[in-house]
Image (cartoon, rainbow, N blue to C red):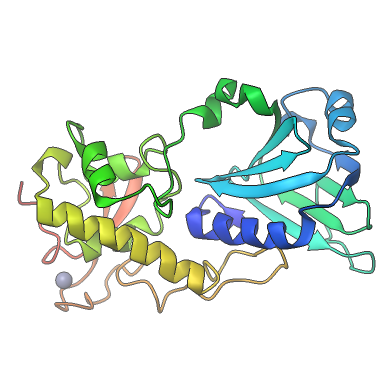
Length: 278
Ligand SMILES: [Zn+2]
């Protein structure tokens, strides 16, 4: 499942695998049992989508951008969680799913959303009118996400560094899972005020954001999330340093890791390595 915990690594992996399996193929049939996820009536959606060739699949933050023909982009967001699973003509389909795309060669994929998901079809030249994605920031794996870019982004921002990093308009794709170790590596308390960060801290944080995400992608994403082939990743408890390890010793100084409330989210910190000094 790609879920509430879905973050950049999981969607980046999914988009790579989808690119390999479905790009270049034409959609022959579409079923949608939860039409509320669409941004138009099903009939209209079906008419627009059927017969279109899938041109590309890209991930941006928690969204997949699936280009259909030259005119349309299908925008998918898994909401609280969804399985997006590939099938072949002889595959057994998942027991439950709401959406099914069948391609011309009888392969395709099903989507099972746990709660809700978004499946919005937009004209390619009207993407800037799609409110949920138009203001998404760039992803940390984008070539443009340099240290200078990051510094510029942080400049004159109010509030805590954690709130800043979770805001998808600043950077797309960081959620409450990977952020824990990103901040720990940089020795930053989640409530540190952005304007108090030193240059050295910003540099360490920038490196840490990239390394945590790249390491997870290398390992196939989170251990409890399924990819396009239904396989779970290998990035789990052994890879986390302090995330989801309350009462365990800090891997650096052995101080007991604490779980604290930070706004609407939980944070895991080492009170010794990540003091709230300023
Ligand atoms: Zn520590």
